Each structure stands twice: as structure tokens, then as C-alpha cells.
Amino acid sequence: MKKNIKTSKSKRQQLCHASQVAQPVLPASLGWTVGIDLGDKESHYCILNQGGDTISRGKVATTKSGLRSVFAGMPQSRLALEVGTHSPWASRYLSQMGHEVIVANPRQVKLIGRGGRKNDRIDAERLARLARMDVKLLYPIQHRGEQAQADLLVIRARAGLMKARTMLASKARGLVKSLGERLKPCDVDQMNGEMAAGLSAEAAWAVQGLLSSVAELSRQIEGYDREIEQIEKRYPEVELLKQVYGVGVLVGLTFILTLEDPHRFRHSRDVGPLLGLVPQQHDSGEHQPELRITKAGDGLLRSLLVQGAHCIIRKGAPESDLQRWAAEHQGKSGKGRKKKVVVAVARKLAVLLHHLWVSGEVYDPHYNQKLKERRQKTAA
Image (tube, rainbow, N blue to C red; front, side):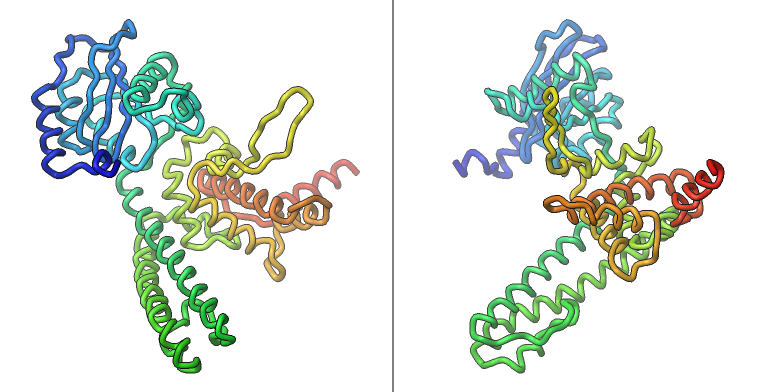
């Protein structure tokens, strides 16, 4: 099994060379539709003509040279591929060749994700046929640009270090408790090897490496924080988002880099479904079950918005329309009510941030309350 998955360097070179030599001879006509199932090492493709007949299929190395060998000399066509690790750079690269590139969302296309017969060759053909029939059936997504992708990588790398640091710190605290001892209480960014001095020899030896690793990760995270501050200077619109309490550089910059183009949404409320902050729906007649949120889209931005929502509704936070709305709904009965309110505030926060970004308005935290009072006066 492992031999089939792992591809040696020489085999990849042979694959790329084979794709260059055996490049399909295609008729000189426009209107082809191509499905590409991107793999980590190699990708399968299927080419359909205007009549829907398969005129070529094969596989190619998932590299720029491999894709160029097949698609660079091809007349302008519609190319459909699934979202994945390689889809951002591959879609940009194929678009530069003059092709129309559609990036499909497999979570929405059950025919691809849950077909009875599923392999790379069949998936490529299904992508091609769906793209030929109606692009909307693929629920296409829009990848961000290369610069935004590179800047967002810095934030994602920091998030990875944060997760690793939290895990190591929790492990260190848990290990010493098994011996009836405890580490001194402190924030995780203040933990270091010196904290083992007050422990027994056995416990100190066990957690010394963990504590030193936590301190090293904190130092690296500080380096990423400095880099993020430099990246912020390239996106002055972050200042519009930072007007909202609970939204700092990290939340604002991640929001802008993830969405990149605010004008691709007709309404600000469309941002919530994109980030998976709306409930799933499985209605049937009068039966409308209450389901969890979809959790579609970017998980990092969704978690940051939830953190921002916690800041907004916590005790001692400045009063605002969002905080007032949360207070009104938290008192209602229901299982997991507080979590649902936090998620709802996160969704409202996403809508608010998008509106500020598009409009450039000065944020008034009491806008809805003032509007309500004016309407009451008018009605009276």
C-alpha cells in the first residue's frame, strides 16, 4: 500500500516526461471542457469536446512543468478542479494560460464526494461533465491572490505555533499533577525552564524539555507578531475593522486576507454562510430540525471571530448593539444557549466588519439603539 502512494523522484520525472511526449493531439476547436482531479504527486484529467464525448484522458505530474506540458498548448477551454492544497497555485497558473478555471467545492457536490464508484479517473470525468452542464452545479469558490495567500501563510504559521505551545504547556502541567505537584500559575507566554526549579528532581527532569520548548515557541511567536505588524501596513483598511471592540490586528487582517475582495458579495450578510456560521438545514415538510452550524469555509477566521464575540459580550466590555443583543438572548432557556449566542454574535460581527470595509463608515456601536429610539419618538 505504501509503495503505491509514495512516488520516487525518478518516477515523477518519468511521469512528467511521458506527459510531454504523449501530449494528446486535440482538434483545433474551442469549447472543450476539462476535469482535473488534483493529487499530491500526480493528477488525472479528462477532456470532453463540445458534444460531450471524451477525446482524451490521462495523468500528469502535479507540478507547473507537468501542467504546462498538457494545458499550455491547448486552445482556450473551461477547466474544472476540486478545492484542495494544490488548487490555489494550480488555478492561478492555469488561468495565466488563458483558460477559464472553475474551482469546485466538493462539500456541496455530493456526486463527487460520495459517489458509489469513486477514484481519481472517475472524479476527473465527473468534474468535466458537471462543468459542461452548468458551472453553478460545482458551487465554485474564489481563491485569493498570490500576495494575500503568502501574507495569510504567516498568520496560519503563527496559529500552528500557538496550538503547539498550548498543547505542550497543558502536557507539562498535567504531568506534574500526577506526582502531586503543580507548576506556578502564570500565562503560557511566561512559562520557561526556570519554572521546574521548585519541583522534585523527578518531575523537574520530566518537564524541563517541555518548558524550554514552550519558551522557544513563545520567542518564535513574538517574531511572527512583529512580521504581522509589518504586513498590516500594506492593508490600511484594517483600521476600519479595528474600530470594533474585540477586533485587533490579527482578527482584522485575517478577515481581509481571507475574503480579499469584499465586492464579490452582493450583501454583507452573505459572509456568514461563507464562513460556516449559519445553521445547517435539513427541512422536510413541517419538520424543521435545529442543527449545528455548517462550519464551512475558513476555520481559522471562524475561530478568531468567535474569540472576538467572547470579548464583545464579556463583563466589563464597552456597551454596544452587539452586546445588548447578546444580553437579551442569553437569558432565554435552551440547551447550549450561551454557545449559540456567541456563534450568532460572531456571525453578526462578520457582517458588521464586511459592511465597514465596503462603506468606509465610522463605526457607531450604538447605531441600532439610536435608530430604535428615533423610530419610537416618530411613532409617538
